[in-house]
Length: 160
Image (cartoon, rainbow, N blue to C red):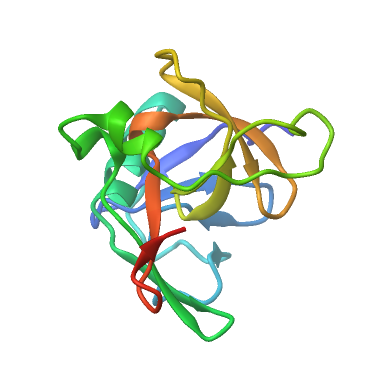
């Protein structure tokens, strides 16, 4: 796919990724139902590098408050770990979870929000800036811990 790594930014600082037949809005914008833009003639887009696109996306998601409801309970993604004075102690204080899946069984996991997606983070007690994350939809990827947000259950008034 020749267009798979083409990233663009518009005048509103929204980040788009070019696919063959559309541009996908990557920036957090919860008012948009369909994130695919087929007609971009009204948008003024400037091409940027993949690195710059993700750098801006991390900052945008870090500044976005994410609220949602699941099973009649309200949740909020707190501030990013990078904003805590003692990031590692904050991580240690969160409740631990376990999953029965290949490669994760027996590991302590914490539930976090990363770039708008809920993930199980397989952190290590030693300092590593990146850790494997397992999305609730089954995807596996590496994430930079400082951009992860712990999840607060507002209904039960506790960390998840």
